[in-house]
Length: 138
Image (tube, rainbow, N blue to C red; front, side, top):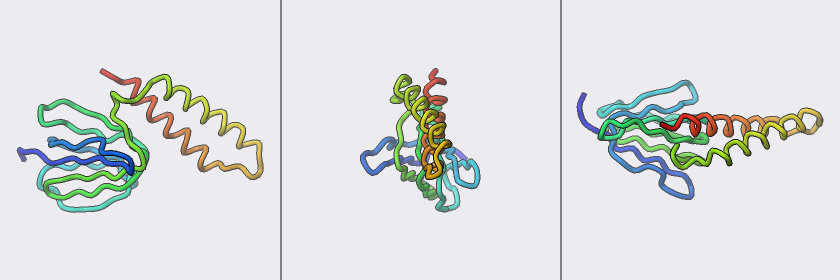
């Protein structure tokens, strides 16, 4: 099916993406899903990962998201994310530092009984996804 669909990726602080695209692929809680123009409407939760899309000119684009929700309509996909950043905006050194902090925090938390393991693990997962995405710049 030819045509474009509107993609909106927003966080509580800003709009990260607002453009017409050919296809959107996103990390749904139950697995990755894709949306083309004319898709059946649905709403889903998102996990930490990468929203991939092909822009109107055929170029692949990538956006890191820290969970959230997605609404797909026949002519629009809206992603409401806790936080999001385009691959080109990820600071590689900052991502490496965040990974190191998360690994140290997780190691320290394992030694405590009252550890906040879930939060430490989520920080590690975010850092790993951002670093992986930033490292694959073309």
